[in-house]
Structure formats: C-alpha cells, structure tokens
Image (cartoon, rainbow, N blue to C red; front, side, top):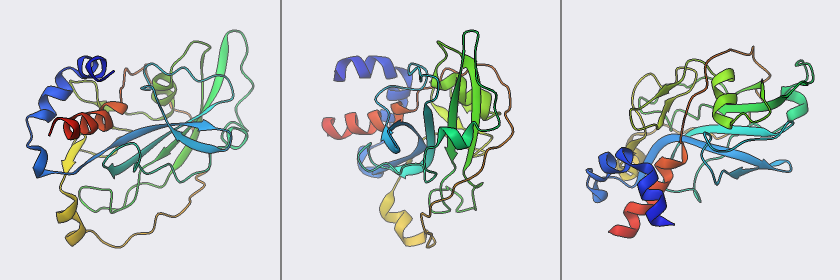
Length: 213
C-alpha cells in the first residue's frame, strides 16, 4: 500500500521530502471529509476519485494537522436537507451533493488572520461526478499546485500550499481561539470547471515521512 501511495504522490512527495523531517511536525492543508450518518469521517479516497451519491455531504477543512487521526473536522454539522433546501431535486442523469467548507480558525492561518466563516453549498452535477467536481462548482476560485495538491478553496488562503509547520514554534505565537461550531447557511452556487484535486496527499506524505525516519 505504501508503495502505491508513494507512486501516486509523485512530485508532491519528492518536493516535500526535500524538507528535513525534524524541521516540522505537521502540515497546514485542506483535508477532505465524508459522512457516516450524521458524523464526519476522514475520507479514504481523494476528492478526484471519490464519487458521492445523490444526497451525500462532503466537507473540506483548513487546519494544521499531523495526520488523519488528529485532523480537525469541519465544524458545521453535515445536513443535506439544510444545504440543498433551495436547490431543485436533480433528475435526468444528475445528482445533488452538499458541500461544506470550513476555512479554519486564526490559529490555523499562517498569518493569524481571521479566516472566512464556514459555508455550505449545494452542487448539481452528473451522476458519475466526483467530490472534486462538486467542490469546483461550489467554491470558485480554486488554486492547486503543479503537483495536484489543493492550495486554496474560494481563494483562501491567498498564498502558500500545504506548508510544513513547526508546531512548537507555533505554540509560542498563536492567539487563543475557540474551535466553535458554526452552522454557516447555504451560499450562492458558483460554477467552475472540474478540478483534479488530491487533498489526502498532504496527510499521506506526513505519515510516509514519519515511517522513514
């Protein structure tokens, strides 16, 4: 499994492996989430591969995390009925997927700036559409790196892409911030082309680097 993941990561893994492992202990990145009932579950596939069904909810959270086990979940509770209440039922080979986007807290931001509030949208896409396509419809503009990693959703953050973080140094400078629940209401759907994104790469890279040290 490790060998398959390493090959899939390609240039992303090579670039991040060039950074000394001892220099940082986490990554600041967008994680990808799916739902099991009414709770969030860290996705086992990247959004460019995952194909949510009609009525599903997918989530994206920007935060500093060491691995999937410690990753911060979206603070908005997954609710398809709330997100898609104003979107007509899909038909004719189409499906509706709710998309939750949590931009994190000031402690997650590289600049310690106040991030946008969490938002929820409803994307209508083909029945075989991926989570990446749903995100592209709901959160323009997207920014990705040359290695395929997602860098920004809805233009946030303005710069940087899955940076390594020295958490000990961060603890000395980060402001106090509560990770409160925010049920951001549905926002206006925005249309963009499908994006081939692999958010799970950042967490996988970290795990592979730990095993190799």
